[in-house]
Amino acid sequence: MSERTLTELRELMIASAGVGEDELRLGGDILDTPFTDLDLDSLAVLEIASRVERDWGVSVSDAVANGFKTPRMVLDFVNNRTAVR
Image (tube, rainbow, N blue to C red):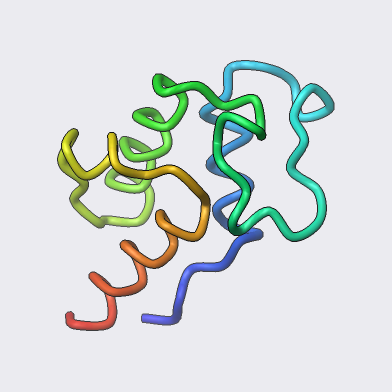
């Protein structure tokens, strides 16, 4: 399986935010930008984790999801899990 990208994660982030795409600051290089700076709260991060499970087939516990602080952390987690399959 190929690595998941920031573009793919942006789609999940938009779907998880519960607001319109134009209300989020997801442009540019946001890999290391904290979710809070992207206007995504802890519930949105849990929703991202849920969508990662459902759409990408990678299991994410609540404890792990609560540790996600940036998009890079999500992508690293997902890509490390799919690389060992």
